Length: 475
Image 1 (cartoon, one colour):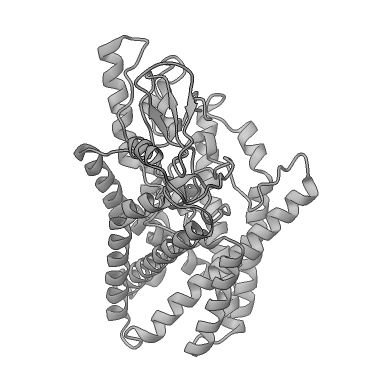
Image 2 (cartoon, rainbow, N blue to C red):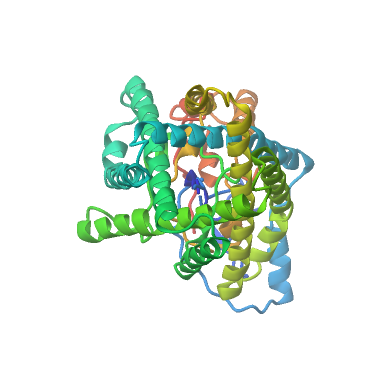
């Protein structure tokens, strides 16, 4: 649902430290996708991307897919074991803190924002006519998505903190606020149109419609876009703040006609299928889980959702281990099963928190309740510098990425903070101009450059907004 960091897509290949200097060497073992670099750079591994709705999520991987046979030889197995990142207790604690932050702070804020914005649209957009209200939301959402997608290069080129810092912060936050309303309207319009055109009271019809949507998503390899918070935390990095990925990644300047078609397909086809799938699972629980008691139904969904989230986080290392060692159709099947598990957990978590807010947050003054959940969560996320977590943008492909990248969960908030602090301490100990190597965290390779060029990266050392480009050679 929220894609996020743009969150769901695969990210660059992990970097493995070589004990000896020399030129980078590519690993030839199946599934490793690794390489060695000089010892001046430590091993970094991301926890990324695919993302948001509604998960949200960062950049899709542009690395080619390597197809290998499933056979292993002892030498390759030993090298693969050596290349597999190993986490110490400190890193595991940081990973747990990231997950707790996502589950207990970011996800509830994102869900509350969506609930408030969704309901406010119902108040202001043709409240007496469901079809008109749905069509208005769908047009606002669809056209808004199209405009933000085709104008992303304009924002990248003209809005940058290195030129006008104050202008950048004002425009970027207004961009997120407006784009957030656009995303909610797109989902609300497609959801209500589906309610209007099909039955919401017939379990059979809801199941059939949902199954058709899921089949199309599987066929187009876009099941990954069903993910949402709490499986992603999209941070407000300046380098990709305005980026919106399309399904076929067609460059706009070179092929404008195909780019427009790619954008329309990504927004109206894939986006609508994701909404229909969410609406179906949500509606099934409306019909089956305490249908006459909204409070019990909400608590039940919350319990189911967070138990599923706990299980998916618990088996995530196993999924990464498996995906590093398989490829082809088998890897795609394993990834799709995991995506469906995260989808099931996300829908129930959203339904539980959303309905609990309906039941307990000023039920006698619903307009105040809507405004509170529209404004306060957005301000809190903006203060935490992860306001882009509310956005649903980009289309990401199932199984994309080398090795375990296809099942990575893009939550790196706490670990990035500690990496930055470790950089600062290393700079003070080593020299004013040279920083110490970063610790071995499961982070994006872009973060490896933080502090390496002290004159250029002073901003990165004082703010999470900056995400410098990596200077590490990727093979």
